[in-house]
Length: 478
Ligand SMILES: Nc1ncnc2c1ncn2[C@@H]1O[C@H](COP(=O)(O)OP(=O)(O)OP(=O)(O)O)[C@@H](O)[C@H]1O
Image 1 (spheres, helix red, strand yellow):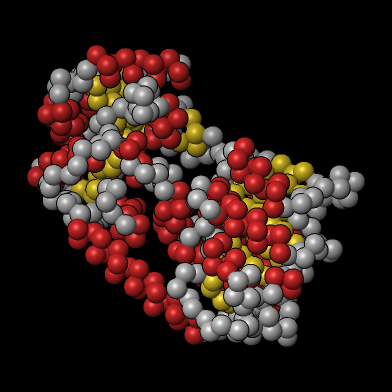
Image 2: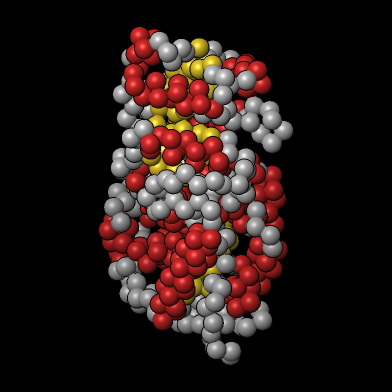
């Protein structure tokens, strides 16, 4: 797809944002380099729960590090607006009767067959007359590729005005989706894409001739109403991506609704979300009238294939010693170590590197690109130990990690066990079936109590391990 001066402007802006981000980093007390290599500077004491959970950053991080489709063995649930109409699903892209250039684009991306969610979503999205859709499935299951294909299919290249409008929660996420549009539309050079993102200034009175506009709600709203760069009445497809991230951002929900109200009645409305809590569902129903609904449940994680142990210690130094004993006795290919505070995480990372380990630190101070670079290197095996706080690592799947160490047990802000986080850190989805090892460091009556409550919750015994006894440690490795 041919890009234009706008895309160039966006590139420049991206570079500016990056340099701004690195300036920000320079002001921080801890300065991990992009390789995550550690210097033991003091950081403000902050529990991981206090670190702001930034869903947009997590979503971007996942996109940046993901290299392929997330597998899911669950059944897709389909709720049709008209239950009497036949339910179509496709097993191949050919069945969709796409324009040849698009089919070529899909194959050039290495897609051989539709993903699970695409099997059902694509025929619905491409049906005539167009149908509305609300779709939920975990990140990485092929939602973006699906709606991009739908937008590209509906565009009439000869009509030189915006026909598809796609809302993303942030500028960076809009750029990521834009890249998919460009890749998939590669063999359709006449199709043009514009970015409605902050800083992308146009002359007043101008009208946009690009076929697809992707942007953030505030700017898109301005372009449709105040500035009138887009005629919303001509929009044929309206996509709301990452609805769960969208509603977590102040103002986005209202702006999206205001945009939706400007669109013609027969505009196809499509909404995608990785999760479906009540608030997302309410929002979805407000912006997508008469929808078909597709849901794919997240693959459950279990503790069944994990050997779980705990080590009794008296303080932080003993925990560190126990960790060294573990490393001394068994071969640990790659480990992830979770700490409660940033301060502990950076202390531990520094101590481990002093011991000669190749350590990466994932820290809340890093901008998203730096975090992605750290995870990427760890995934490639360039570092063998990843030390992190929980908020930083939430939602990140590093499947090949065989050993997880809870240097601190996960607790919520009231100090109660955080069972969900425990499961997410340690659990595996059944399909991988790889055996894993989890070691919990316990250093007080309070943390013993937390451990007991975790055991009760999962109804799974966590065995005690004496890390001074080398024979015993060796046994757990087998
Ligand atoms: N049919 C397919 N065959 C092979 N790979 C695919 C297919 N569809 C998508 N992918 C790839 O799988 C990865 C995840 O797809 P995609 O980004 O569309 O998922 P998503 O559900 O939109 O994720 P997110 O919620 O994070 O945006 C991407 O690398 C994409 O190129």
